[in-house]
Each structure stands twice: as C-alpha cells, then as structure tokens.
Image 1 (cartoon, rainbow, N blue to C red):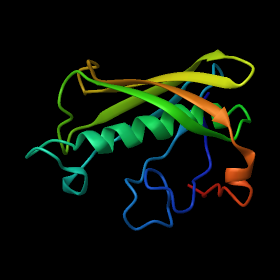
Image 2 (cartoon, rainbow, N blue to C red):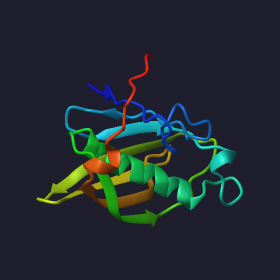
Image 3 (cartoon, helix red, strand yellow):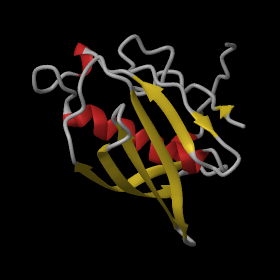
Length: 146
C-alpha cells in the first residue's frame, strides 16, 4: 500500500504554493520505496521536445532526499551523481523510483531512476545526504486532500 507524502510549500519540484513548481506528488510504499508518475512540458524544456538536464537532476535530488525524509531525517544533499542514459521526452508519461541504499553514522545514501513509458531507465542518480535540522527549523509540510 502506498502513502502520499506531504507537499513542500514553495518547493521547486513539488510545492503547491509555487506557481513555477514542476508539481510532482510523491508516494512511499511499505518497503520505503518512493515513487511518482509525471509528465514534463515546455516549462522544463532543454533540447527541443526534451527535458533540460537540470530539471531531471532537480527531480532526482528531491526524490533521493525525500525518501530519506520519509523515514524521519531532515537532510540536505552534500553530493549528487546524475547519469543521463536517454533524453527525457516532453508530454510523455514518466515514472520515478528512489530508495535508501545505505545509512552511516553521519551520511545517508540513496539512489533513484527516472524511467520512460517502456520502463527503460532514462536518468539515474545517487546522492549523499546529511542531517541538517537547523536548515529546516521552520519547515511546515502540508498534506493536501485529494
């Protein structure tokens, strides 16, 4: 069973208060896997008809960090590795999965993939996150009603 995660106000990737947000909605399952389904448009365009690499990097950063937040750690990225396998087309359904891969005393590692409609991996990433409670001292998350 999947549980919808709260929205993040003005977040560039998933904030409902940000008129320029990509507008993603996140879900986490009982195994801690974070998922979303989405479609990108001209607002995220890089090469004609395809997403800008920065848009896919931002989406993966948010997903890989949020999967860590989902287990209770307020974190910030200290290292991101993004691998571009195939261009992300605009106006096509895309899916994303992210998961925690390792937890150390100070660092939490996660990974994610954005997949095309045929389930092939278009963009993958790995991230290292550290707990940063002072950075998020005033964060209030909202659970929107469906």
